[in-house]
Amino acid sequence: MHEGGALPCTRLTARQALAAVTDTYRELPEPPGGFAPAASGPPKAPPGTSPESPSTAPPDSPEAGLSGAAGPDGPLGWRGYDEARARARTRTGEDESVVAALAVIGGAEAVVLSFEFRYLGGSLGERTGDRLEAAYTEARERGLPVVSLIATGGSRMQEGMRALAQLQRVARQSALNRAAGLPQIAVLRDPTTGGGWATLGAAADVILALPGAQIGFAGSRVRPPDADPHAYSAEGQLASGQLDAVVPADRLRGTLQRWLRLLCPPGGSAGRDVEPVPPPNALGAPGLPESGWQAVLRAREARRPHAEAYLEAYFDDREEISGDRCGGVDPGIRCGFGRRDGRTIAFAAQCGTATRPAGFRTAARLVRLADRLGIPVLTLVDTPGAANDAAAERAGAGAAIADCFAALATARVPVTSLLIGEGGSGGALALAAPGRLWATPDSYFSVIAPELAAAILKRDERQIHDTADQLHIRPQDLLELDVIRGIVPPT
Image 1 (cartoon, rainbow, N blue to C red):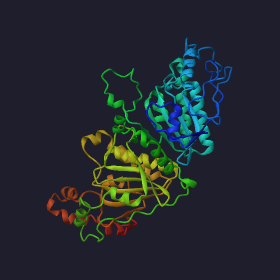
Image 2: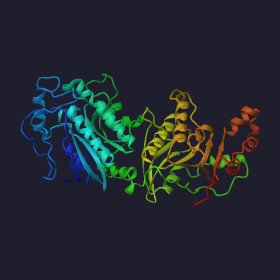
Image 3: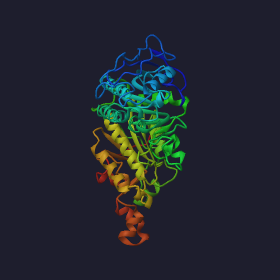
Image 4: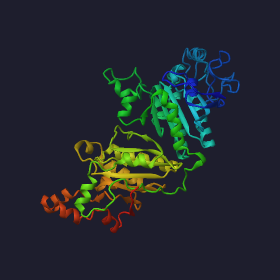
């Protein structure tokens, strides 16, 4: 058993990275399969290990792989491959590019995979695939999350297609754990490229990265010469919606602890038989509006409480996800997981701006993740409507809204929604739970903005006030129409 404690950085060894984020860890036993590493004597004891840490010494004779035993220099007979692996063992004390361990992080158990980049560039070969498959299986058998500390250049070229095929093995194991409702968290170190990024990294539920880490499917030596380096950085990937957060090295351990506490609550409080969460109390003006237009003005008041105020008042602590994984980020929507009275709750909150396609996709991603993990959902509805500019149309506004509708409609966990401001047409309805919508006194919900309804139906902007009344958009109107279940009281 190893005691953790060091601060992480992008260039730590596999075991240093393990020690940096764990309280304790115990290496998993070597799985059978693959072919034997180059014989060069027993591996050196890695720094910081103790006699309690299981040995990962390779067998003395070749083992059966996916297609039988391999001869010298691996499955392709790549000249010098045995010597390269022997040098890597001498240099690193490891006999493969990944260390798999059963660990404790902030009191929560997890299976942790840590890559050793100094071992042939952290590349994925057949023996790497054996270890990864065994680790995912161990996680399923124990009902534990998988945390991957990735630093890899991709598939091992000296093993050819046998190496590339390991990506299919990893993808299948990740899918099996996903189907079992077990969270997967990836930490992208420097570098994370190729198949390691496209499987262990990009397929994770929560993706964190260290500042300045090189991240991308294309490694530095195979990119176009004029490629923008920012696009292949942690910061660039965050800006394009591919990551949830870039976390400074000295905050990584605490961030992982919070995520595991949220996604793997003590005592297994997450599950299929979950109770719906109560809607937040109203934070704004308590009285009900006298007219439809007054309801609109109150909801559009810049000083009224918005999503941040509601999230701050409702949750004891929270972590957020970011991005739609399709190249977009919408700063006008907040999604994540929080704790309230010891219970984990997922949230998706509109912030009062026109919601963009990336926002709807991020909310749908949040709802589906919460549904898979058995965590109830809270949505806060507040938007004048979906963004309708040309850029939004090119980004697939209609498909994104449809996807959000589908995610809420098919969620098996209960979703609670609170209208906290403007309820602008389908852009707002997409985040409103069917049959479980409440409203604050300073809100309204309308099939269309009163100004637009007056322009379309009456062609007279002077009739906006009358039109607002005719649309029956006040909270009390919505209750009478059976659109909402109730008007929440003030705090």
